[in-house]
Length: 252
Ligand code: PEP
Image (tube, rainbow, N blue to C red; front, top):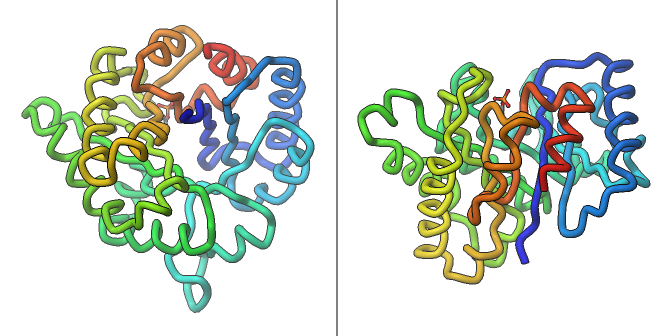
């Protein structure tokens, strides 16, 4: 059975004290919840990964990195490698977030390399993709998503696909307060599962978690998560407040 996942992307927010306080609050508030088959993940900035990971060691909360370089070491000033994440016991990395694509020039081709490196280092990948508003207005959203997935993920060996979680994040809904309707999310998630099924087979498609991201809040989480092909959420703004994030976890 595929996992339900709620992942909080803290982006470039929260200094050390704020990160410690936030993760403590989340741990405290979810420890008594019945979270069968549900993963709760937080993604702090690189400088706070290690300490947040130590704090979560005996809890239900997992910690992910927000990015990673495709090379394993070398002259790449400012970058972080997969072995470095392995070394501090980080097991998950977010790749392909739209902010990385838009502001840091991450292409599908570069992301394919990053995905391959992450897999080679046994890291779970939370792979993000999604169309721009213009793509949706011109009815190109399915084509865009298909191309992003094919380019970055279809090189993966089927036996490795268990490391992949997909996160559909329409760019027009990220940080804007605009959310895809539950029906729009379901329609796209079903399409994505169909793509995975055609290429990797039914079993892999059925076992792949597909998260929705884009202005998920306590008020809309339940309805979005109720859709059959929506297996959870990647949360930005609402992940910065323990109460909101925990309310979204409870929406399951
Ligand atoms: C995100 O950045 O992945 C995201 C979904 O942000 P927000 O929830 O703020 O739209």
